[in-house]
Length: 234
Image 1 (cartoon, rainbow, N blue to C red):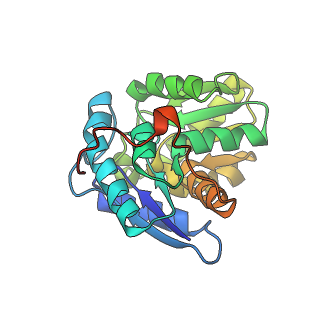
Image 2 (image 1 turned 135 degrees about the vertical axis):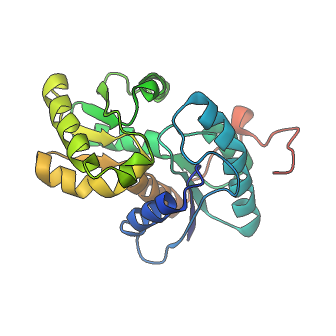
């Protein structure tokens, strides 16, 4: 089985972190490729960044499709280009926000999302509604830490932990969802410190993609998610 994980931003160090977290959860016999596009934003923190990242995501998916990749994971919590990518690939494509939220819903009555900047909260609310999980999503909490600052701010872990602790109390939730792929390496430590399940979308997305392939399932090509009639070369 061949799974390709696409980090939609172009920051190599974040791609490395995503790759390490993804490799920690894949099963035997899985070849994992972790990439970022050649062109795109260095971090995705706005609707503009999200839109600018989509051509790179689609290019990587199209390249993987030609090479025979079995499944893809889009490793950004905004799930940029997810539906468009599902039109391009025959195998399953998983966005980490959807995977994280659905995984969290298995583990408790409600979850809290702890994310980066306040400007991303509205989009996360939209995703919870789109995925039918608005009831389980009890709150979305911004830490004020930028995506790239997760790697450089020495207090980042403590800030995320304390926002997560406050979210659990304020929302009366049972599970924490990390709302950024740049937080992927914090999940296990946070779970110990907080005493609740902490879901990292990278791990959840890779595990879900692998499970879909093992079941022989793929995206339906019927109607809306059929290949585009005017597919451009990407």
